[in-house]
Length: 114
Image (cartoon, rainbow, N blue to C red; front, side, top):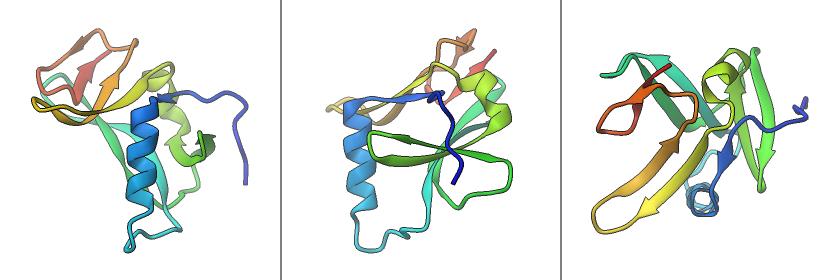
């Protein structure tokens, strides 16, 4: 397994706890890792990708607080320095992306422009 020296993204403590909770579910496929990435689309031009997936040939592996993570090497320019947080308040529940590379974001918080 190849591991990058620097971790391109951060997971907040609450995000780590939520991902580990999901990974502990009885029906979780333990062969999968957390994928963080981007794809074209969304109201601001690009949308974040966050979910469990199997490793592909152009993926980089890294680990954050015991969470195995995959990311396409070419996505690093969009995501380097980003923090993924998990909020569980009354008004909002879910993963939140704090990306210093985004020149603008949309109201839903999952779409951005660079």
